[in-house]
Length: 361
Ligand code: COI
Image (cartoon, rainbow, N blue to C red; front, side, top):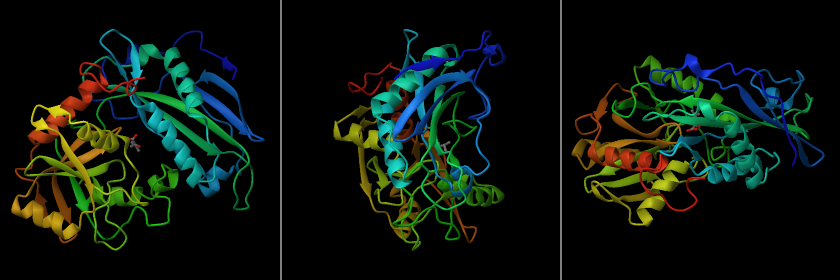
């Protein structure tokens, strides 16, 4: 594949952002973005161009029928100054899974990695070098064919943009968040698009998100459509920690997005990883809401939170129910198991702790 570069002569930089502290997640843009087009069964016109507008016909299928998918990846500045992608091959495989669900074309994993690496190379000065910060990478693909008939597009564009970032929640790891548990909204159902990172799932999450905010909470913890089991929180998978330190993640099904952070934590547990709190224990389990609430009340559940690329490990301090009952997780503060896992995980990402071969690319 030939890559074209149309680079700005003078970088619009960077001096503007001395630190990522206090900068809202996702608000910063770098100078350039990557674009590549698909037609007649082929990806072509790979190019790095100044960040900006994208031309689309008003009838582009992505705008009308939501044929659009994305990923969230992070790259980290290492002690030697290099920049490494964290498990980006898993994200590349996941966008292809989303593409299958949304009847869109795959992009070879190696090609996706090359596109990301080339854009990072151009924008390397933008990668933050401070604690809890990263270069957030947003690859996305959308249908460009002009049609008002509801159908699968025959043309697409793949784009990558970058956004230096700090923590997803403004309080960072140390401020436990509050989730609402409600039977008013559901994220996905069996047989739907729940395992895809497609834009429709996030569009549908806006109203529940506003509802959570209106009740003084950060986000909704979704239940399955029968209101029986815990599912996920939309921007992150959910976990709770039992008294013996075991992390329990709701069992993946076809209405939960498989978080790469969750999968990594399950793999680390399988490998017998030692945290400062002892051996990491983690497993998937279907979690009935009633058992979960009883566990919070009885003290069997001592910590909880979310796992995600943007969220990393985000502790939850309390749950607000539809009838205004609040269930606090232990003392409502960040617990030692979540902290030990967060410290281990982020140390692997910035290279101060060794990670399995191939995880930092
Ligand atoms: C990510 O963790 O990359 C996500 O997809 C969350 C995002 C929607 C902010």
